[in-house]
Image (cartoon, rainbow, N blue to C red):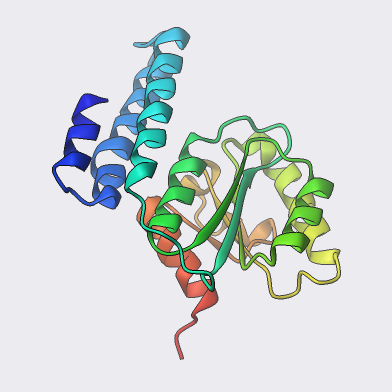
Length: 195
């Protein structure tokens, strides 16, 4: 964590810290855990340490303009993985978005209501495993059927889309972010389509 904070203090852009330090570190932690080379406790410690570093980095974020586009981010009900989502949300905020990070496992009815109150432009929906794809499709369908959400765009992310890049279409989303930078670019395209 000290290296991350030293980088921020030295003036390195926060986006670079997320993309070149935090994201690769967490990918490596996940890889080692899947190989059985890290215990659950070690993985949890690394995740908790990353969360603390991210919280401290927020003091370097620029102010957000009142008319900034709005993003709401969450994972689907039953999906308790949200660190990548937190990082993607922060990247959007660093790029001028007004962000509402709801965290993990928000029920669809709560999400529909919250989106309506915040005049959301983009919903960033995390799906960490294929076990949550049906829930994601049902959540998206429920949002689509709700009056007043016609202009809302839905951007998904997570490991199920890594191997099947067009899967986002099958669950009713408007796009997919493969990594932190791609999520920002996709969200920006959704609200400012090229002419």
